Length: 349
Ligand code: DP6
Image 1 (cartoon, rainbow, N blue to C red):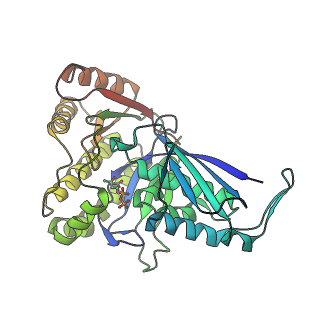
Image 2: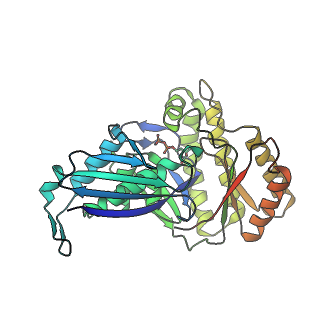
Image 3: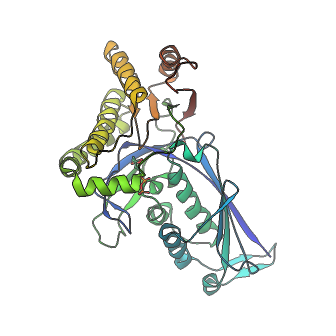
């Protein structure tokens, strides 16, 4: 027999960034972060997990190509979920798995991204969240989504925030074992559904410095990170929660842009400095800043992760349409700016 489960998980975009770990193995961050989860129709991972007594080892395929599961992060997630596995009884298929059997059984995992893995569009976040969620269903683990987020976190920090839709907060926690470092939903996807997210793909090349090594260098060398984690982010988290609760787009945009800029300043403050944005990214920032200043209240927020692609959050559909017109005017498809595609997604689960 074979027992199979398929799950789909969208990616998330941080509006208050996670950057820097206090524990690299458990993946514990130096500050809280807040993100928005995208609509699964646009950027998501679909993962099928299967178990059968005929499987003689754990195996995984990503976009059809077999990848190694020997990395510590996969092993940690698999071990943690196995520890939570329960009895499974599927009368229809005549499958009965006792809790103690899970230690001996092997799983096969097939995962697909509906967006280019190399595009620097937070593929690990959706990937690990989906893997953990699918395995939890396969093994009948009783954990709620926050408890599962603490397992997904051990695959990739940002993955813990993809277990929920809407706006999500990753609480950094205090415990040394990481048990209180988990994600909670702030508001669901219906709370602020007029927002429209546009991703301007500036470059689909793989990033030069991975988040993991970049963060390590930052923690070791940047004084600005200390200031950010202790003084700036705690205040911003409170203000951001308030802005989201009140659907206050002016404050939301100001905080989102400021936090993205400080994250990139921290990267510059790292030795050797890390450059994630390029000239096109900078031009997009100038364009949005200029437009926002010409209006009574900001219309668009921008945020950039560990790469040059712009995530633009428009106040509503009208602002999104105007934004696209401006982007197409300033960056026509034939220009050498390499800004050739847009991914448009509504914010929702
Ligand atoms: C810039 O979650 O990819 O996107 O925990 O080492 O896997 P690891 O890092 P990762 O870092 C994401 C960093 C970020 C900001 C964010 O998503 O909060």
